[in-house]
Every structure is written in structure tokens, then in C-alpha cells.
Length: 157
Image 1 (cartoon, rainbow, N blue to C red):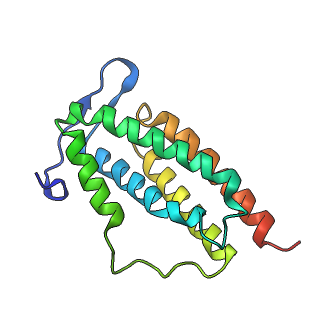
Image 2 (cartoon, rainbow, N blue to C red):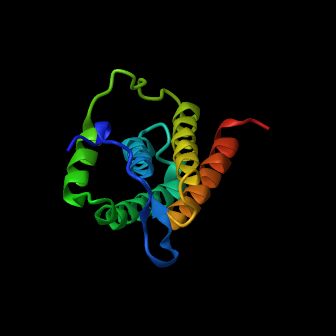
């Protein structure tokens, strides 16, 4: 099944207090996960490796929470999570024409990481409030940490 061309399903009950999520929303959250995962090598890049040590574990926790939530929602949307993982892996490793060159400076790298965290958080904030709650909270923490790092490392006072 080509999820990129699937019709948007109606909301699927999540049971109890876990809310509901549409296929479109699931794919948006999956896209946020992919972007966060694609940004992961930046944390180890020479430009920010020493500065990003505080943010790296928070980003890892956000990825873990997002993956767990994606796995939890997949069966409710009649999706095979193993197939989802395969699609996610392909998307993470695919070269895109629009990929920017690697950041040349610490400021560019931290800015790129902050941008990815902010965009991912915005995506999750648009979803059902009961979905991806822990990941949203962790992404908020990641964005704050990266913002502090950017300000302390890149803005002269």
C-alpha cells in the first residue's frame, strides 16, 4: 500500500483517554520522526559535538517516544508497523534533491537542529491532544535546550 497516495481515513477511536488519530495525522507524525532521525548525525558533527552533548539524549528520548507512539497507533489504523519501519528507514536514508549542504559552522548546525525540533513540535501540536503527549513534552524540552545552546554558543553578548 502506497501511504503517500492513500485516502485520508476518518478518525480512528483510540480507546479510553488515548483520543483518536487520522491516517493523515499519523503520516504527519511519521514525517516529524523521519526529520528528527535525519538530523541525528548533526549532533555528532564536528561543528556541534562539544556543544550538543546536553541536547543529544533529549533528542534520543523524543525519537524513542515518537517511535513507540507510532507503533501503538499503527494497528488502530490497520497499518503493519514493520512495513512502516521499512518505509521510515528508506525515507531516512534517501537522498533528496532539496537537502542543504552540511552546516559549515556551529551556528548553522545548531540553527538547523533547532529548526528541525521546532518544526517537529509544531506538527505534533496540530494533532489530537491525547496523541504523542510525551513526545510533544520532550520535543518542547529539546527545543528549549537547543535554543539555550544557540544563544550561549552563537550570540555574542
